[in-house]
Length: 278
Image (cartoon, rainbow, N blue to C red; front, side, top):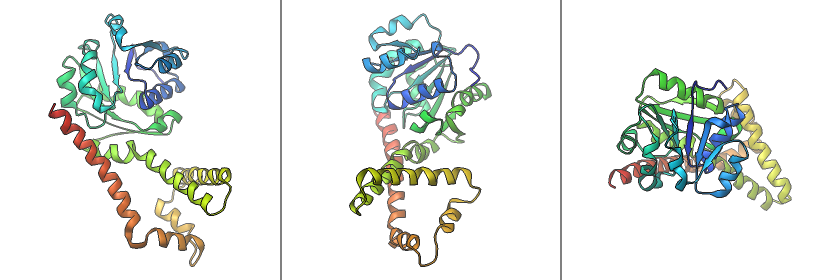
């Protein structure tokens, strides 16, 4: 990874997503000494300190006032933004690019807190960034220089996409941001069903997991569409056809997936409205 010139990155929050992004950056060659992490969890700080990250607890942030951060990644849960984000306002200077992964928190809302930020970018990654297979979508109203720097930071973590409109972030959050959890849940269901059908639990888990991994690899590597891949493995009057017909019966699975994504999208919208009313 080509590190942006003179980059000094502050990450506020080293939880599941913030931590995954940091580890993804380290795997792509980002210099750990240029990353500063603030988190209240001692074990998280200890873990990243061993990797060469500069670590601080929230009550130690006064020590960071002398650092000129080129970038700040706000990796707090959206419900924590109103209560905790203002504490870090002093660390975002007039030359700082603020990047936020908080679902539902708009650029306008972030700008009302971090009034000194030179630019603001909304990022929605998903946890596979940890293994270099993430999906990262982003939106900003900043110019080409910030867009190029953002892409340089996040493209090495997987597949990176710019959104044309900020409102699209709600749908992207529902599909790609939350998507891995849906896939994990489907895999759990396969494991549970395989066990109930008589397979030993350890074997059921391995078969289900490897089936998902193999299918995902085919989607990635084959030129055929997903529909064509499904059709290619579905022999007339065979076992796969019987299973698919039951799965698609009455359109229930399609409606459930649609309802699932719409619920996540609506929650993202609600979070934004809740913050606006505070």
